[in-house]
Length: 290
Image 1 (cartoon, helix red, strand yellow):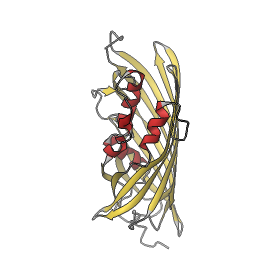
Image 2: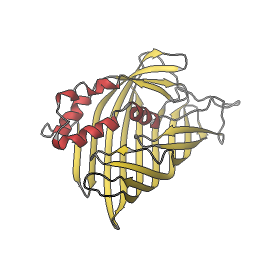
Image 3: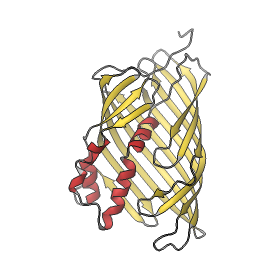
Image 4: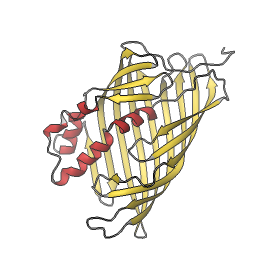
């Protein structure tokens, strides 16, 4: 049907709405003072995006979180934050306060987020909570990482398939470079390939390589400690996309990172401490046009 190849790109119409539902399971293996420590993170969330303006390169979309859940288990304890949970914990109440607050994304036809704006609106309901004292300080640090402009940009991009600006046939490939979906100095270099085409759908796969771009960048962890990272790894991705709109309908990602984190001296830590670690992450996205 596509004798000259297929031009895959995102199409936008004013008023179009999409639901992006994410489920992520992550296992973190760390070696602290020679002992193996296992941690788990489970994330589930939904973002809704609506096209409110067409641009020369794509569109401006209004985005809102509809639900959020993050559950973690580690040797330091368990923590669950759930926007659909009870109001008994401040963590749940903070997540509820983030919901249905608008921020804005400019997405181009290739699937690249050009910029994010209005992220400060996500904090408008959180300001009622005193997160600057006591045990709630780590929660605020986590929110700073999760709701920063760069984190929002990379998280939305992770749910998008990146397209080349040329016509492609099954077996053709192209490349992209994306940021890690956290404020870590890590980039992923993806090699994409069109694997299958039918009238309505196309299958796209990608293999990526993670590389640390700045080993000297100092990060602030949710517990307040300072750290540097040196992590490298691989990523594989499979996606089903609409040949009509370019939007993915299903996306699965598996990644493996390995290397070390260096906790910097300070507080109760008299000297820098190397922590070898391995991070395995599986993510599923389902995207539905409303």
